[in-house]
Image (cartoon, rainbow, N blue to C red; front, side):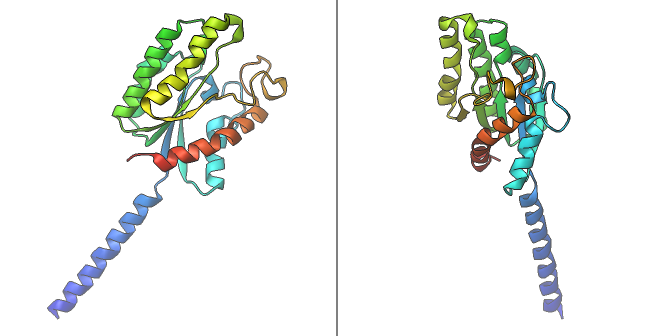
Length: 212
């Protein structure tokens, strides 16, 4: 009788552990989308910003992810750095970093942008957060020297930190009036779909290499 009770208890414990293990595995991957108005969804109808569309696309391919939209319109890289600790308090497992566009629009020194982005990546690394780093191109009206210095920041830091790198967040969308809002800077819903379709394979890789 005693052995029978022990066996029943063992079965119950095993069942509880199995359920607990299954619940952990089923938890959605938490991804921090850390960026500017491009991430926030400036000028877009609710539900059409790239973070929402990306989350839906991931679900469609069988990936359960929760993307936290931490985009703030007008943020420079310095602004982003100043609020990163607060964003990390939610304990994301991975991050998509889109920063620096407003630095270029304001003509800020590329060396300062690089310093801030370096610090952002260092904080994410220290927090054991897997990163997809998105590149940005400087407006060409700032001159070839500025553009060359600014554009080079992103591949350089991606290599330095060994993170996944998406060369240009607006690839296939920039300068196309059919894919942008009237300001010529922010994508419209059609442009968002292009961004998501092109970045999706990189995000799938990000999820595959994330750390816990």
